[in-house]
Image (tube, rainbow, N blue to C red; front, side, top):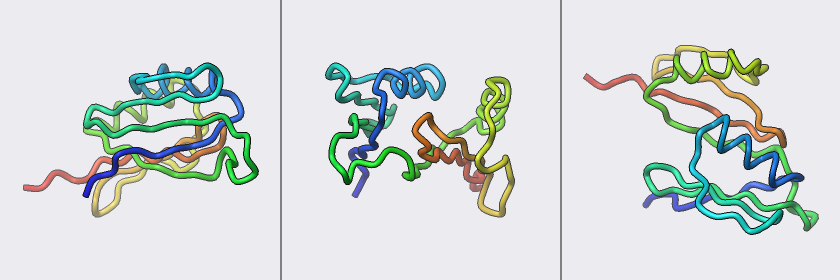
Length: 117
């Protein structure tokens, strides 16, 4: 089983699109006006973001993780952009991790698992 897609909610589609496209580096797959934007990952998984309209569609509070092969470079990129890190760069037995918040307050955790010998 593989994750196909996930949906987050936002107050501002254009602001969130700019963040995920320009800052995070995701490719936009599709946008429907100011209601919805979809991003596609290199492995085919998708991240959709809807403009919040229903009571259950609360922006912020969600968490997802991005596995990267260059976590130190990613961390330095976010440092240069002036991000306040939600969770600082830290090495663990299993690998390395840090987290930032998107403009809606969703947590994006960056992980780089240790290389297996």
